[in-house]
Length: 254
Image (cartoon, rainbow, N blue to C red; front, side):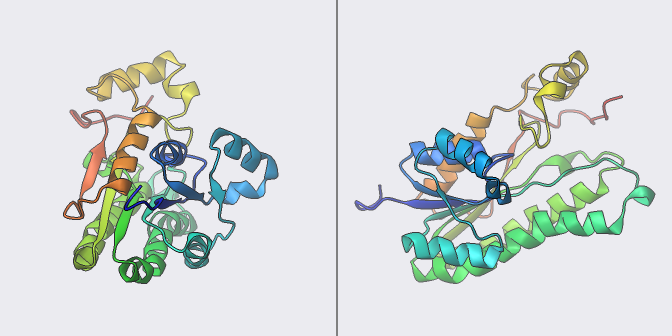
């Protein structure tokens, strides 16, 4: 609660990556949580998600500009936006990478979140401020061969966060990023490989000082803090969530 008012948060791409723990943590913190995900068009997936997250409200628009408009129409105010952006990170050589895949990656990880913020900024300013949390990646701290597409997109997203924070700091709009690597999610570190296979478990032990994958509830707690804080002086931060990685140059799984 803030001044007796229930806070509202919007979480994009809510089904995967940091979406589920962000929604759970925000609901537990007392937020009204608006959720977006194109997979909700499958009625069964929405019913399962709603059962797991009672009180979550599905915003059916998919275009970022229309999504923002609908979110404000539902509640009249959005105190926090969590832009949870993910896309398949195929590891391929530069010469084997299609330009269309590069464009699609940039669209999902850079253009769409920019469009979301572009639409939300006037409303956030008009209501006196708010918190924006981008979920990006810190993978660019130790690049590996064949990962140029994902690395380029994530680097662009993290740079975008810092520039946006400078632009909107005086308006009371705090813009930060949580940048995971080695976070358990079926999008990037699936259970079958990294929790249930000897090879995957050893890879984690070899690369992550914490000796494990990050837990979804841990990143949910961090996102909830950034969404709820009234400390708007905290802006422009890209917070690594990686268990101390990188402590050494990573290598791909053989």
